Amino acid sequence: MRPAYAIFTGLVTAILIVFMAQMIREGMYPQPPIPDDADSDFIKIWMSKLPTKAFVIIAISHGFASFAAGLISSLTAGSSRMIFGMIAILIVFIAVMIYLFSYFFPGWFVITDTVVTAVAGFSGVLIGSARYIS
Image 1 (cartoon, one colour):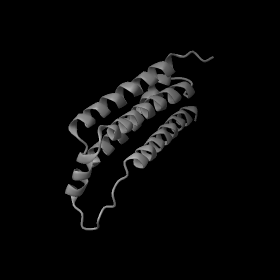
Image 2 (cartoon, rainbow, N blue to C red):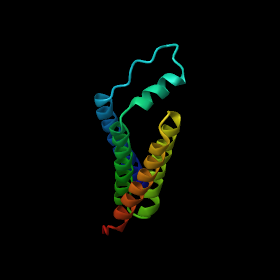
Image 3 (cartoon, one colour):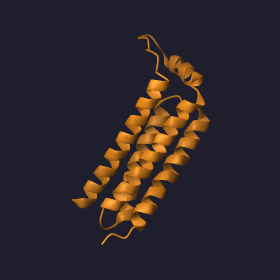
Image 4 (cartoon, one colour):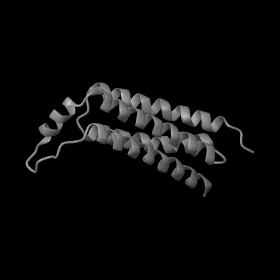
């Protein structure tokens, strides 16, 4: 029961972090209303006009969410902390990959976000699993 709770708390934290960052990004760079007859070119044009700051906000939120999920899952898992931390960041990583390839993000951002999410998540797991809790 404790490992399931560890993964759950890590994922809830990650979802809250990404949700808050997306709200900040949406407040700074709102998405225009999409007409009913719009095709994928409409979204591609809008994405190409977004400034780099919008993508940086998204990458930071994914990295921080992955770090938090790995850290919290590792700290609260009890035994086998590394395994349950890795499960949590794997779930976050898969969700980020689905998000990245569902929209028309620039190639540089996809690579950067993938690396940031993986490295930050693994760092969180290493820090969380290295702590000795009796």
